[in-house]
Amino acid sequence: MPEREGNVKTRHALALYDTPALSEDFTHFPHVNPDAPKGGSMTRTAVGGSFDSTNPFIIRGTPASGISQIYDTLMASNPNEPFSLYGLLASGVRLDPEREWIEFDLRPEARFHDGEPVTADDVVFSLDILREEGNPFYRNYYAGVDDAVALDDHRVRFNFNDTDSRELPLIVAQMPILPRHYWASRDFTTPTLAKHPGSGPYQIETVDPGRRIVFKRDENYWGKGLPVNVGRYNIDRLVYDYYRDRDIAWQAFKAGLTDFRTDARAATWAIGYDFPAYHEGLIKRITIPDVNPSRMQAFVFNLRKEKFQDPRVREALSLTFDFPWLNTNIFYGAYQRTESFFQNSEMQATGKPSKEELALLEPFRDELIDSHRSDRLFTQPLPIDQPEDRRARLHRALTLLREAGYHVEGQRLVHQESGEPLTLEVLLYDSGLERVVQPMLRNMARLGVQTSLRIVDINQYLNRLRSFDYDMVISQFPQSNNPGNEQRDFWTSAAAQQPQSRNLMGLSHPAVDQLVEQLIRASSRDELHTVTHALDRVLRWGFYVIPHYHSGETRIAVWDKFEYPEPFPKYAMDFDAWWVDTEREAQLKSRRSGR
Image (cartoon, rainbow, N blue to C red; front, side):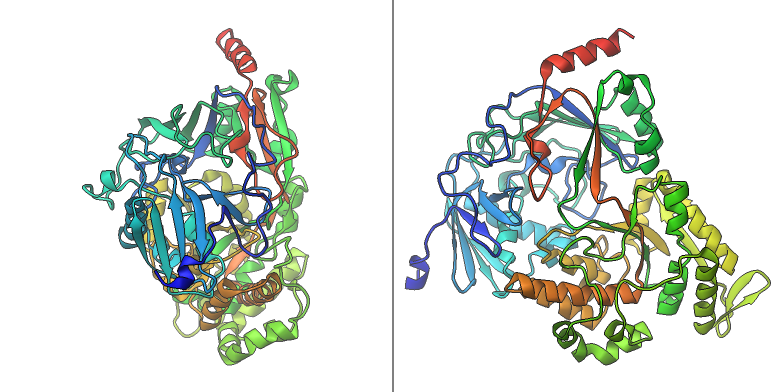
């Protein structure tokens, strides 16, 4: 080993930019209750129809909810820090000052659920099989890793070909570790319903295909006494019950068949809790302010279709989404319109571009003006000024469509050169969003667009996504306070043609590709903000999506048997730190059986 490598200090934690907040002798995360009791169960709702696989890492099949809980990673994040990791499978870590490699010391006591030890060979195997046989996402996500090498049974090194990405060492530290002895003799690419082993705090207990999956807490979990785990993973059984749509799931919750739900429907939250169990105090509602950027949920255009290549068409169709009407008539005024892909954060672009942003955009001026049919992203401020009145919006939309070569024949919009009518189908698997889609489609129809809504089961939906067989879908683009390698999967040319990437729009633009790489290589928080501002501008002025709305908070309803530490963590919710009051649980169970 070269001398420089031998002089690298072994540390207990990693941080993206700053110094980890917790010292080497910390005993538990500050937000947890280290004396939280064990026991009880939590039954959650999974909406979407069914699942047919317990392997979440491959492109085929629909994975079961909650399956990540059976796996450990090399290090674990602290929800009270923006991006710091502490030892889990790894007891220590050494990061080369030049960022050419990182080494982890594995804990000799680490075990998979079947009793086999976790070794460096398992770590190497996990990287290789995820990149070679897993979802194409992993090839992008770990693209900066040359290889992983087992130095001995309990030491592993990752060698990097990308030394500019500050996040890459933390990314590999969060890689799920799979058991080589189990998967090496099996076909990793084929969906399975087997109860395969991991090394995490929960094991698969019951698999009822398409209907339910149950995880049980591993009482012999090798890592239960580690500081990152003390006070966490307290609930004995985690149950995910599947329901075909939100309305049925809501009725199941009211009946006590499930006992935890994230309530994403404003109308339900506003007026839906007028039933006996709530009035009797048996159900509790919790509102938690969002601490990460508000998630961009949006209608996504499929740019692989010729009819959506013209940004004037995309902008025109964007104007048909009447958020003020929806917010007043359906959402009880509970939402705000989402504008930015980094909404409610310092990464959100506002006003006109700064000279630093322009320096990033200028090398691509010609390509951007050509693709956007305008120089507005260089000259005009954000947010984009659009008419509030619906009639004015539709008038503006029709003007844009005429500029794009469409005219009205009868009651249809037809392209003057091709003679093709403008059609649009929205593809969904959740009927609960129909009330959001239909008003927009009615407005499109007023312009002469031939529209339709297709609701299919989750398997057919995923198959159509994989084959790029859609005009428009609804998707989400979640952002953390530290965006990094995952941005390649959202926006880049490489991801555009990969089935099951997050680049559902099929965006392929050299400026975006370059900005994503600069974002990943950002060496300071200020540099990161400058790059995200520039990226945000390119995406917003491209009208690649029709943004929805956000509330700025997470709304949770639970049957009143849970306890949780307060205050909540600063940067992420930690439901693993909750526990069950088993006496109250028994009372609720007795009440239901006595009906």
